[in-house]
Image 1: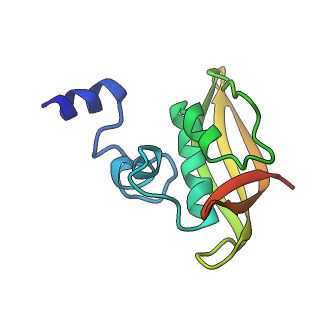
Image 2: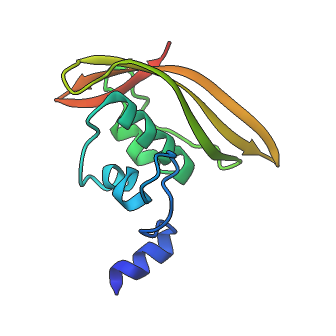
Length: 137
């Protein structure tokens, strides 16, 4: 019962589609990463979970998954941006046995009712055995 209330309060019910667009429900997809039940196996999985964190306003997760060599001290998300869709365009390396990788994507958003998009090629590296966001190329 408490779990059901928490899901309702947070708006992340088990049947809600994941913002990253892969298809599984949020709880089984990026929710598992956000809640620390699992870690990203690939750079692309981390990038998708970070998009979902932007969509849900989870700045804590974004900071935790930022490489310590480039991580800002704090992160303030713009509440006016509503992240609506993610398109992964390309990825290089970033697999289970790689130490670095890049993911090119297009993230769509709405701001004041107007559509916009962010096109980025993100760099990722391993830190303490886990994928971390390094920055944009």
